[in-house]
Amino acid sequence: MKKSDFIIFRTVQIHETDLGGLVHHHNYFLWMEQSEYELFESLNEPVVGELDREFLGSGWPRSEVSMKYLEPLKFRDKLRIHLKLLRIRAAALEFETDFYRINKDGTETKVAVGTHKTIHCMYDATQRQNPKICPADGAFLERLEVYQEA
Image (cartoon, rainbow, N blue to C red; front, top):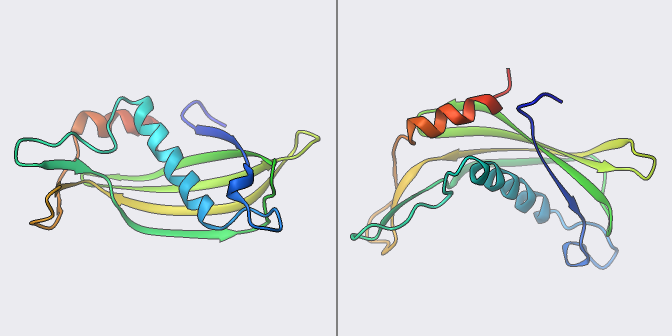
């Protein structure tokens, strides 16, 4: 790992599993999004901007997501989630997220790989108009560069 890697850790909770004790597939998407939000928070960037007087705000909705499952996770498994920033554009970001089970002997096993693209947009909280793609704050994009994969 390099200094610019963004890592979070989790333990699989019972409510994240099915009756057989295996992690339900949608949780990987939630964890992928959680890692992105924690990256944003570490850089003091709101994921959802405050609304102005016209009830307009900014946000980062998903434009594309995918997940490849390699091995199942189970209740109480320890998990390392490695978020990689693949591409930075003026109004879009592209991520890859690697999920690793931390085994009892300290080794790790890759259990899933997810990707997602997100776009920066202005939205109308009253829903009278559709969201509009707009450039993100340049200073924020510069702070993100340290996390971009080479």
